[in-house]
Image (cartoon, rainbow, N blue to C red; front, side, top):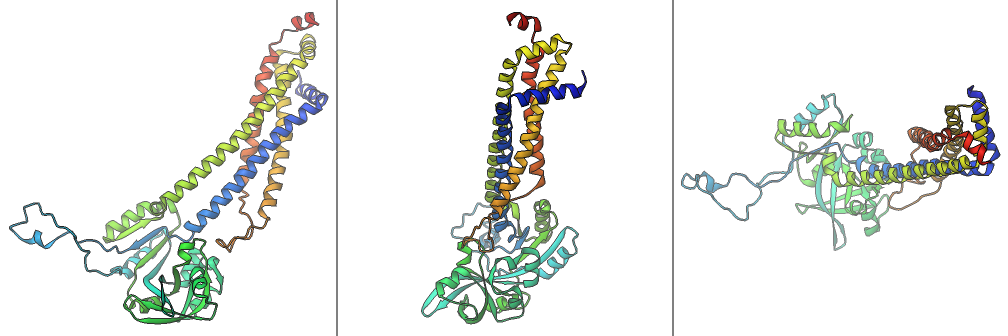
Length: 419
């Protein structure tokens, strides 16, 4: 039989049961719509949380770890060299935190085609002083231009600009938690006591807020030269080298390569944030599991409605088969009905998902922990809409196929005799 005829019959069946057809389509609509809303919001939220950590974390961090000496003096004595020696309370080696040959390492990395950028840092422990009160803190010297280019440093500055810090060798961008504790404002001077007991006085040119309270209560940023001066070290003193790659998946093998070639400590971003990535993966699994469940439930709704429709249309099916329609023709009619429900319900679901997601994305969301975020995070990835559309067609097809197969096997003689 011609497909156009079968398609017209399918439309007639659906139109004759407008209420049931509308309920089935709405099941698909809410399934697809909720899937898109949930996935878009949850992946947007995961992206925001990942950004708080990963955007500010180098793909590879190179540092010089203070370790215990492997060779103890007793092992140099010929008398004890071949014996098992147990030494208690081993002290670390008397070495600096500075990375040896840091300029050579950075030059080699900058010439590596896998590397997007390399930035040196100087980290030194300090105390923030307010009268007789001393607060524990950490002063980090950075290359402001490179930190802004590679790690979006400017996004975390709530007052002031990176340019203010770059142009002021006596300036500091203070953590918002420190500023609140010491009641400091922009333009004030903050007194610091260094590890070697000297005092430095820096002008506050900005405040930063990372969204992590523990960091905001301790950390402050200044120029590398200022940090080196605070540590009482020379201009070649570098405690950390941050490396950003074009492909984050290369971080682990390249870290092993750096450690092997330079006999130095390094850690890749995935190793350093393993627990955080595990949490993100679990949230994604839960999101997709719930979303797919919604689509499957909608498919069962279509199956039940078409199954009931077959019982109600027994006489119609018998007449169709008696007038020359084959079992395959009847099967196609009911599959067309299911697909029509899927197309209409799916299209409405896409519109619903997009509309509600947009409303969420413009809804105010202000929190002191993340001052740069003004609205709820939503991910408008077209892939989610494509997945929703395909899944809607697949679930409605199988939801219609099983009842359609049953309808194709109906014996018209038995139905007409019963009538």
